[in-house]
Image (cartoon, rainbow, N blue to C red):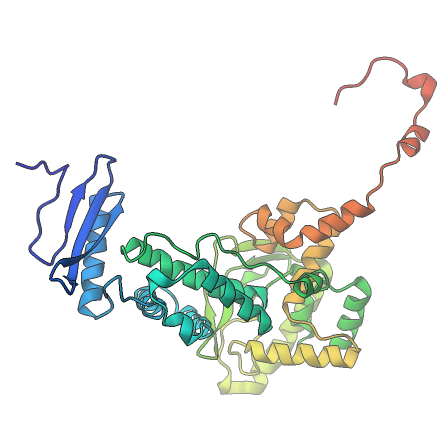
Length: 399
């Protein structure tokens, strides 16, 4: 009799099977049809546990019932992307799913029509080049490649591929993008000019807060009065405003690191106190139309403010101030850049920025530190001027 540890119960025909390998892993197999010569078409793969193997078979059987599972010789990239989207949909927010769909629309039909076994790294590199030539940003190019890579990883797990041609492919910034990245942060003079021009705008408290705390736009729009202690200056970042079907809605933060506690300066507290009074007046004016979400920066009727309105105000202020247009993310970039230039520890800046670790901060803002290093000078002569030669002779001090 076959041991339970070496082989699982034989399933009925068409249900798939699982067996334990000498390596300790579990190999699954499933029949998905027949070849023209009458032989069976089988998919196989390995998992760490028997439970994972059975779950994988169940998923494949469900996909087969829905018509999502095809012969590995005929599955195209487009079909695999569709399968990946449908499997992923129940596990992501509607807005995230919509972003995936929008991102995948950039993939040309001729690439989607390629069979997985015919897809090569050369095809994907050529696609990346075409995205660059279209003027799409490095971030957009990276997101598109990430979707393809993840979908092909799924094909690998399903036994449709033996190698993922997208594995290890990376997007690189163009010279122009690197130049723009360096120019994202405002100078001190530009910041002063912008804030001076912004004082006439009802968005002034929002922009002052974003520059002061280095918040992402969604984080700033999601701030509530209960998240801020106007006596101690404590500010908790706990939610964000995001877009779903072009509607501004309140949602959870994307990462654990984004949930953090910051400290507001006395000047920011003063700005927030003025904003509190403005909201009281807005609530009175709106009357029964007011929808209370406790937001610090709501719309005129208390609902989440649409990011599009923030962008419009930002563009208008830049025009009035005679400054080049910049995105709302520039406030965050300027805040982090200035803190690093002041010599604050990277770990501290990373924590206040909501980065998962200091490596993210270093990778994004390495040019700031490189600029500081180029300007750094150490003069031994100046150091020795401070020494009192006769009094300094004696034992060398250990540090």
